[in-house]
Image (cartoon, rainbow, N blue to C red; front, side, top):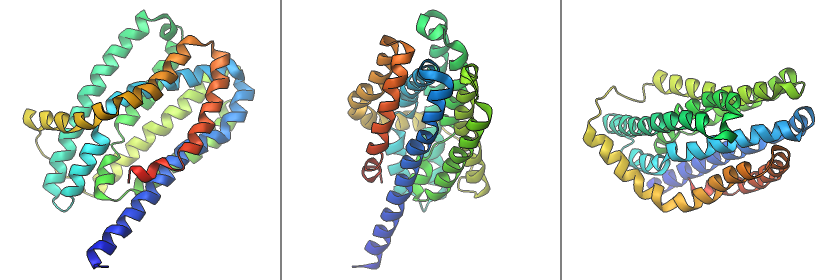
Length: 274
């Protein structure tokens, strides 16, 4: 086998391993605290957390758009050209920021006018920390550069540190907001450390982004977004709608079962993303 092919296979294996570790870790590590949270917070409190997370996952689906595939592919094609990588990154991230701000404003209005959201507004305000943190985690940059291990270490480290934090600070049914805050801070701090690492490694050049670059990023990503939106709406949208339909105790029980399903599913899905 030619050296180029061997190198490609090696990078592919590393990408699969890194994505697998990240996906499995982000899904399975939270399972460690589920029995404790369900006992301490009760099924109602856990249902509140699950419903809040389902709504935020629905919003994140739109913020991610198709950049995880389109931007990663474009960066992979230009990974040896730092200027090109920088232009692709900043144009895609700027486009993602426009989506993020638009959804944030719409969601803040929805909290005011939709009863189910309004009654849990404190939980949603806390979860917006994690929502912003997700925006700070454009992991498609390192996916395109085929250097996924740093983000795996960063995210999983904060996930692991969150376990003792939950056992220490969440002690009663009144601590539902604390549990949400810990989960939100995991994502937010992961994003901050991730961007610091990217900056410290000088992976990007400062570059101007034109409206043409923004439009191109939207167009490139839209093909992936609309090709997957039906499935995404079925999964993320369905979880959210079930949360609107069920009482919080029933939804808490449903969510525990669904997280076990996701843990099993996470064992195989990263292979298709590498």
